[in-house]
Each structure stands twice: as structure tokens, then as C-alpha cells.
Image 1 (cartoon, rainbow, N blue to C red):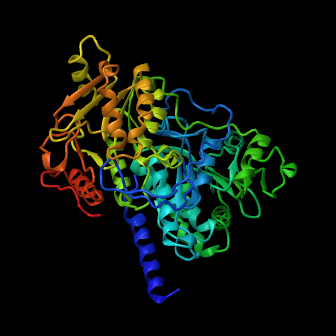
Image 2: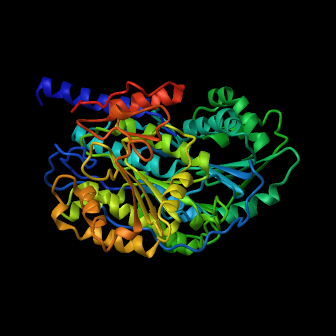
Image 3: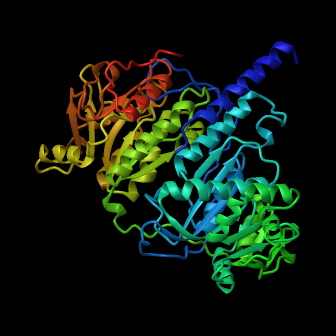
Length: 556
């Protein structure tokens, strides 16, 4: 490799690492292959070619119904905080942990807040592969980052630290310190105990919880699973505080030990007042016949094909972190894309943009859902990827009464606006008709803007979206799904279900040049890459500054 080529490679890789480190992390994993496509969110001037990100379908394994609370827990009070240290590359492992341990098979009905007996967080860290492992191309690293960012937006169940980790002892201590010193105080919650296990460990949580009941001690307890070094550990919260307080000394005195063994040794002289116990666990030897059904923790399990037989043999029952939401189908969900195009245009702005939408949804009691899989699967249809928007709406719509679709490059400018007011306006202006689609046509546009839409869960909507999917003339023709929606809604057959805010730059959507104080959504539909403009607008919103003067970026 020529010197200049090597320099270009490392500079490119460094740029993407910096993006990961600096991006604001408030939150279907899509395997990545080379995809030479440019950013396209329904605007002209973008070319597409070849194959791209592969959607492999839903590989989730059916699991038993989750156990746990079906009624909301006392706000802020949890039995167990579960910390799951995980390398940034272990996206599939985290998905399997969600499915098998917590019964979370997808993000279609996310928790607005944890309200069960448990609360969990993945403690995601950088790894040696981040800089040291040979990477075939900077493009490969881009693919990994795109997938990682998609996961962050879709699940929001993580804390990310861009730090190389070489041993479990170090990361478990870091994760516990973060929980005790930062996470618990910031969230203003209380927990009785803390469980830690890696994302390569399978645990039988209900049986663990039963086991530690025998370790009840007024001075607390420390429980481990696995030997010679444990791959799961649980401590009462008062013991967790003692460990964190003495963490530096514990590490210095027992550098070769894991966190819990080191802690036990450190508190030996004098003997610890808290109870120290161990539970049944087994090192995975790749032989299901050798697995003992009494084991409550199995690890490390690196091959995902081994998870299902282990779960089945141990009869692991998922524990739901959230109580059932019986009112969800009467609620509104804000739906957006978590798919980052191969040119990485919106990579830096994607997470802050999702946070803006998530915060707005939380403020008004809506759900927030982000989807990437439906965009990735468009590689197999021959259509432009932006058509994934229609499939995403079809996927999520049955779970809610209304969906509010927003493109990734659209941001909430006025957090106080309530979608129910917009819906009420449309319904009051359409006496005698059931409105299922609410859209707006900007003053200077020839058709609606499909970057911001309200869709109701009705038979009309399902049939209308099916009709839009058949409009083949727009599969690869400029304006794409937007033109297909416009063409279909003008058909008298569908007119009764649509309300159009015609020649309206205020109610649903506005562009930077037309923006006025008090407008609801500002949409940076690209004439180039909109990332810089989106970030500038989000920073001004965060600082309480006016958005007047924010321009649409022309950077390619």
C-alpha cells in the first residue's frame, strides 16, 4: 500500500471515530455490505447504483411470554439494575440478550419509561478492534458505525464510552462506577441490587432472583456465578457503593482478578460484614448435552447459533422490564428513520435528530419509534431506498391509533405544539368524513411534502398504503414515494380519507427560508447534505435561540 493511500485510510477512519465519540448519544440490526448509494430523502439530484445493505429478515426466536410486573411499579423504585457490558461490535449479541432475557423482540412498542421491577442498560465500550485490528477498508468501518447508530436510535437502552477495554475486570468496575455515581443520581431512581454480566453470557434471571433471596443479610451480599473467574455477579446496592468507593484500591491490590473476586479479597481483612455466596454456573463447552439444567449462568457464548438450544434447555423465561401498556392503541407514535445512507451524510446529525424527536414525544406522552430495516430491504425491490418509509409506516401503524412520520432531516422547532390539535383541526374541517391521512403542501411546491405526515390506523389507511406501493412509475423516478402518495390521494376513490393543509408552510412543515417564529417543524430537505444545518438548528433549539437565519446546507 502506498504511503499516501495509508495516510488517506487512517485519516478517513479517524474521522468516523471522531463522529462516534462526539455525537450526542441519548439512543433490527442490519448486516452491512458495500452500498454505493447517496443520501436521498425524497429530493432530486441523487444517483443510486448496485447492491447495498442486506435485510435478512426477522431472525428472532419465539420465546415464552415474559414474566414480571403487569402493573406499573412505584416510579423510580426498582428491585434490580442490570448492567450488561458489551463491545460496540456485538450488536447481534445485544439483540439476543433483549429477546431471551427481556422478551424484547423488536422496537415496535418501546417503553416510554421503565416501569417494571427491573431496569437495564447496556454499557457499550470501544474495543481493540476500534483502532488496532486490521480493517479491510474505511468503508467497512462506516458500515459498522451505521449499524451501531441505528441500534442507538431504535432502542435507547445504552450508555456508550469510546474506550478500549482489554479485560472484564476493568469494564465491570467502570460500569458499576458509572451506575452508582452517574446513572442512578441523574435518573433519580433507587435500586436494591445490581446485576452485571457480559453480552456473551446467558443468564436465567428469574432463577437468579430466587437464588439471592437466600443471601438476605442486613449488611448486604455479593453473589457470583462462574469459576475460576465469574461471568455474572450480583451485589446489594450498599455493597455496590462500598466497591465503587474503594475501586482504585481494589484494582491496585488485585490487578489480576475480576471485579468481584478482587472486591472479596480486598474486604477480607477485616472480614467483610456482607454475605459472599456463589450460584450454579457453567462454562460453555460447545456441547449442549453437557449443559446442566440447574445452571443459572452460561458463558461465554460467542456463537449466536448456540443461544437457542441453551435457552430451550434451561427453559429461560424472559423478564419484562416494562408493564403492559393497555392504552397504546389509543396513542400516537412519532415514527422516523434510523437508516443512515452509505455516504454517511446524516451520520453525525442522526443521533441528535432522533433525540429531538424522542424528547418531543416524551413531553406529550407519545411513543417514539425509529426503523431502519424497511429501508434496507428496498435493496431487493429495485426501488429507491426512500420507499422504505411506506413499509415502515405499514409495519408500525397497527400498534397505534395515529402515526406521525418525520424524515430524519426534519426537526421539532416548537416543542409545545400538540399533534392532537392538528388532528382536531383537520377533523373539524372535514365534517361527515373519517380523516385517515393529514398532510400539507408547502406554498411553493407542486405536491405534498411527504417528510411530515399524520396517518390514522384505519382500513382506509391500510388499503391506501397498499395502493401507493403499486405505483410503479415512481419506484425510481424523481419524487419517488412522495409523488406516488400525491398521485393516489388525488384519485376520487381516496379523496374522502385525506385532509390537505394546502399552500401551508406553518401547520405541518416549513423550510428554512420560509421559517417564522412559532412554526412547528423545520425541514431541511436536502439540496446537498443537510447534516450541518440540522446540527446548527438543534443546537439553537437546545440553547433556546431563534431559528431565524438557519439556512439549508448546500454541502455535497
